[in-house]
Length: 220
Ligand code: SF4
Image (cartoon, protein in one colour):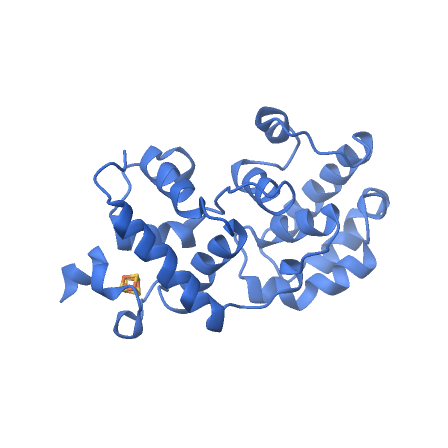
């Protein structure tokens, strides 16, 4: 699917982004190296469809109030809701988070390595499964969401299917991009770049990728 994209172009994308990330990357609590699996998973669940800056404001208090799966499983949904108010769909998310916690207690906090099993856990879809592989199992999986998709599509070319999860081109491309010795930084670099430079209204004039970007080529 991505045979038409040269290795050179992929390397350029990776190198320029990592260089940019070194000085411009955002620092978030959940990017620290030594969090518990619980803390990593909660962060990724909350980050889905919510701005990282919004999550950053309430995440530390959430973790103090609910420090592990047990405290979340035992908590009243109303109490969880109070903490999740800053994010969208907080009623639905509170119920689902509690269910996830109950399931994780049943599993004694262990996460299956097999992809199918991982995705069979309630609330763990493709994105969260990728995040678990990346931050917990240290595998090069992409945090591909609308933001990563926007950067990749502008720079390399558009996807074919509306749903990111099933688009073979975007899926393959995102895996190739994060196939790097530092897959976490590579992922975070793309996400930060999407939030700061390649925003919905992109800042192409100050973009280090502009010389090889398809979207930029089409507008100049
Ligand atoms: S040149 Fe513009 S569209 Fe292309 S990657 Fe940079 S900011 Fe995004």
